[in-house]
Image (cartoon, rainbow, N blue to C red):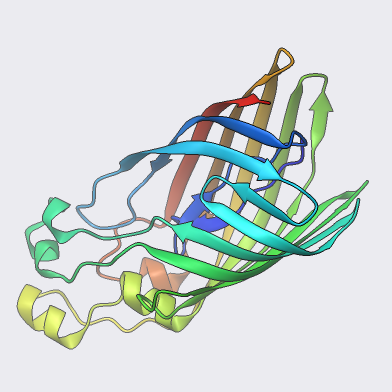
Amino acid sequence: MNCKLALFFFSTSCLLIALPSHADPLSLGASVIYAQSPYRGGQDRYIPVPIINYENDNFWIHSLEGGYYLWKDSANQLSLTLLGSPQQYKPKDNDFGAMKALDKRRMTLMGGANYQHTADWGIIRTSLLGDVLNNSNGIVGDLAYLYRFDFGDFSLTPGFGIMWNSSNQNKYYYGVSSHESARSGISKYDPNDSWSPYLELDANYQIGSNWNASLSGRYTRFDNEIKDSPMVSKSGQVTLWTGISYNF
């Protein structure tokens, strides 16, 4: 099964880690995302997500992500992509009084393109996605290198990469406007674009002929444009996604 990790993060913008795709035409299952909150007074989240993986020569669905192939062969995959971004901020759920006076940041839908090249020396993955629901009006880019190790029914794929957030993306999720500052007492903050490096690791285990267990993890080190926000209390963020699926 090919390792495919999608954006979008709960990290620099939001790190949504998609479970690896499978050679099987259809797999269904259940999974849970653990997302460490980057926000001051924020609560870490556990998000149940159904696993729905389907792929043919023209289009694919991998849980919260789907796309249409513009180019697909044994080494290259170029797709038009739609991706659900679960990053959000709910003031009423925050434990820090001043943070409750800030505006809500909503989840959104990202659209764009991604490209993956697979060779003996590893995997190059890149994507460029923009907010199609006009919540943040932001753009996010990603570039990563991964290498897969196979040990029979078990595979391990470590990698590293960097995530770019446009200034609009950072302003929506990490900025503090003038009216928010006046209402909450938190200093106004107007971030620029950012570049945040990350490390990731995917593990997959084939349980018999049909069942598969997966664990994906990522640690993102925040750029100063995010880390210096008065909304943010951490220098980085951890996201984990674990699940089990049945291949038909």
